[in-house]
Image (cartoon, rainbow, N blue to C red; front, side, top):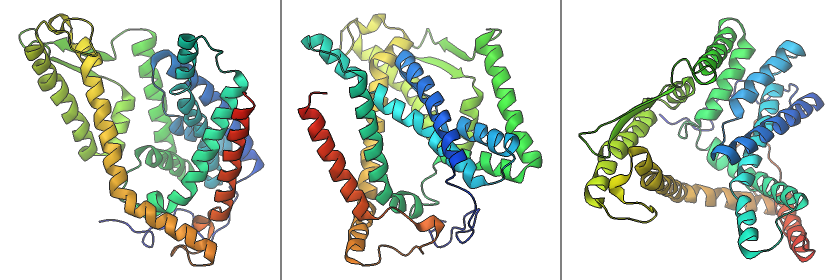
Length: 351
């Protein structure tokens, strides 16, 4: 059954005022954002993917705020992990787009972007993302509460709640963290046993069976639940046992774009990296477009209500309590206009 905004009761009641946006939470959050942002920028440029910073930030936040500083506000913990995880988001937005500018500069013989340019692009992108998310908060979080799973946010909430309640739940969180860290060190650090196992089916050309034995995947599967996990498993089975053998069978000795070698000479891993990952990327893009289309009426309604607030009309049914307050839409529009003018002037100045 879908939980509506009226049915949902927050862990900290809307009427209760506790420390949240404090100097301590902001400073610790900024420190974590810098650390996780730098680590994810390096990792993303090295291997092409980033790792989530939200859950580690939540664990570190709980350790610093509750244990080291002896402060007991779960909202401060949440503020720290929110700011800390933002470093990963900004880093991902930069490393997956800005390298194209360097490639174009090398191809066209022009100057590569300076550090100031990179800083301004990341700053503007982060500000615009926050500003555009403000009017969408009620549509995607409040109205869709109980519908969208938000597995990463759910995991962060459980970590913070475990720290708030203390006792066995908190010890379970840190025990899980410790066991996973030891497993990762033994498997990948010492190399005692592999964390990834794969067997190529010789009699079934192009197919392979394998598994990544990682505690992180177990945790993600538990958080997402059996339904979403079954979708992921089904996609893997179809890819490795159906699509890849079909590509091997019908491709034969042909060279099919984007590949540069005959299909018959490609291993299952090469088939996946050459063809299947683009199918997966297309499925992700299609899923995003379908989700956008399905939620578009809700998004339009939210913006209409937000614009109605400019004329003094009620923009929603949420009481003006701590959990219902947003930046006014007039501030959002002015800020976006100022940023647009700044981008225009920066472009004219050839920064």
